[in-house]
Length: 123
Length: 216
Image (cartoon, rainbow over all chains, first blue to last red):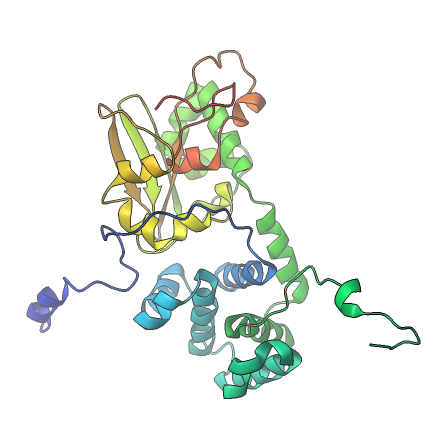
């Protein structure tokens, strides 16, 4: 293949998710009961991936998580990454429209004016 | 603030038990869910049922499998040969990924990680614990498994080989911990109570009947 030599030199670069063998600090072993929001994100992901819908597979899911920016990956929670990946995949697969999502998001933010505070005012 | 013809202070009389969403990703969850329902892609009922179904998937299913394997050598052989079809004998549906079952012995201790993400045998252990998904666990387990085990309070003798299994999108692992001594004649049900989630991930050993940990 044309890209072989290039591939060889790039092989040493790690994907943002490829953590195996790196150094790390102590493991935080606190137990955490998933919140309703987290459980709903989880449930939606399972429903999208499972039959009969099977809109995307776990490999596509992983590719989407891996293509998040390193800054976002580092600074976000687990289900924050999931819901962000789900948004991308839903647009990519033509399930939801990007404009519809933005409009709905604005409507949702407006429901929680005291909470949306600084973040909500930016958009 | 007065309303509804009476006068009281909401700040002290009503305490919301669920925190209202305040972060962008929480708003995004609501937005995607409502759009999916509006467009008829999924129903609200289906999402609620799926949430409940996952709440009901716990490590108890895994513990049942282990206790059965401890007491039935033929079942254990089948389990080690083919995880998916053998857990189906107990009515447990494990589909979509391959379930590989490994056995801990005096000579060999297995522990499971997913260095790339959070692959986990969810149908039999439920949703993975936070630490399993943490960067430190994913990074360090393949580098210094004994140090990680020590953090979990699990000391494996140096004469025992420690083997780390890295999950993939296609393969999930279940560890059969060593059966504790002094459990001869115990019922399958009583044995299952000794099988903890962590012992099936391999970060711990099974409990002893007196509540302590089994020597690794």
